[in-house]
Image (tube, rainbow, N blue to C red):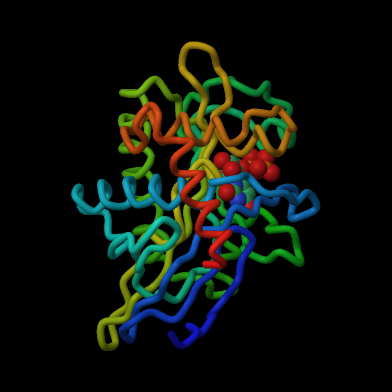
Length: 259
Ligand code: UDP
């Protein structure tokens, strides 16, 4: 088979040209980075699990009318997505103080916020993804006011949906990051949800024990990283109780066969 053309390689994913114009293939790697890529490592089987978790969440969001780039999962590590023009803004939604918010403002991690906060960061690795205000977005033309209204509305809908979905399986959604992209319909541009939603870009705590079930286990060297990702997938009903090792084994076999 002819090699597919690689469009982009990021820290956790690779994008390849899709089978039809306007589509791409999103490949989920096991690579993990933190602190603006100063810390690097691999989380064995992460790509397989994130592909499944993100498929599950994007499909569910589609059913409640949140438009997303997801078309369908192709295999263990790949999904077919719509090609979008990425809006260079990371949208962070917070329900509970943690991470950079706690550090910046001195608010103890785990403090419930009296209202949900939406923050914006400029997607630029060289600058370390600096936090920005609406004013910067308007000033530099990264998105229109109408697009930002749509983004904020979708972010709140995603938060309500995720908070309910995870509460039902004993998990508290502390915060998460979203990315959006534009799709063009003639001269008309529409904003849809892009990227992924997985424990890589969310903080998820067990409701009873406050145990961290997300990438903070990697960031903070807490151990049990693979198990935490598997636990999220298992509670979502995506892994049978004894399937976790099978998923990882399958993946190892593929690697051995050089695929
Ligand atoms: N996040 C992310 N990518 C980034 C920065 C943050 O996915 O480049 C996620 C992160 O996993 C967390 C939320 O966004 O769920 C808020 O992150 P925060 O601003 O607290 O930054 P951090 O403490 O991760 O540096």
